[in-house]
Image 1 (cartoon, helix red, strand yellow):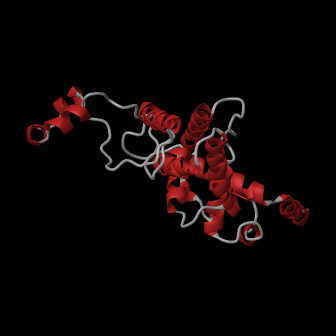
Image 2 (tube, rainbow, N blue to C red):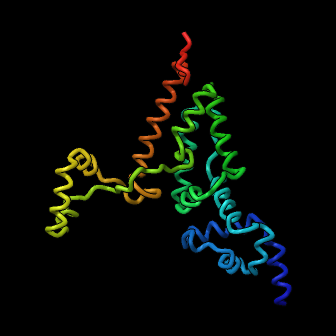
Image 3 (cartoon, helix red, strand yellow):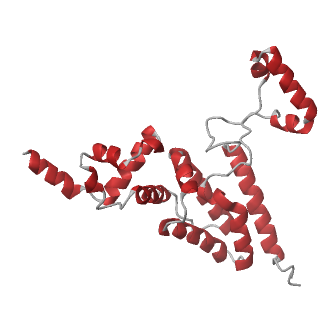
Amino acid sequence: MAERTDAVRRERLDRDRVLRAAVVLADEDGIDAVSMRRLAQVLGVVPMALYKHVAHKDALLDGMVDAVLGEIDAPDPTVGWAEAVRARILSAREVVLRHPWARRVMESRAAPTPVVLAYMDSTIGTFLAGGLSVDLVHHAMHALGSRIFGFTQELYDTGPGPTPEDLAALGPQAQAAMQQLAAMFPNVATVATSRPHDPSSVVGSGCDDRFEFEFGLDLLLGGIERLHRRGWSSLGEVPA
């Protein structure tokens, strides 16, 4: 009976099931908990059974990223290019929020998978279908960077500025150090403490909360649209 049960498990195991189980495991326990041995335990198979579907750990991680990208909404062909790109990027952000480990894995990959390339190709296609020049789209993709996948890379992990309650809780020496820094860099202190960020919506590190993400996205898309209307070229040749 046990042998028959094992046979059924092996028969039903496929690549999609392996990847879905790995994604759930990473969502629940973090990406560091994902190993071939642990995944085999979750699926109720021996580790060697997994290698028929994913060649090695790196292939598993690539497949997990592909599975996550598959959750991003397709571009809406009934709206303008800017609205379609914006909606899709915000969909990507919601996906990354559901799977916060995905950013770390994507940043660790040496080369994009065909699924990642297909996602980029589709995004580029939305720009081109809107009439943007290849030249402008090339630079727009560089400007958007990782934002098309739903996250941004902050230069420094500054985090939200301290609240008055935070400062009051510090000891005298720490308060003096904070006051000294504020005196040395008053402009940084003014901006850093001007508005607290939403700690519940951060993807990765820094100030990447929803407001900051959408603010930056709208600035970029608005600028791209203005350049498109002007007939901008990186060669500096603007049609009359």
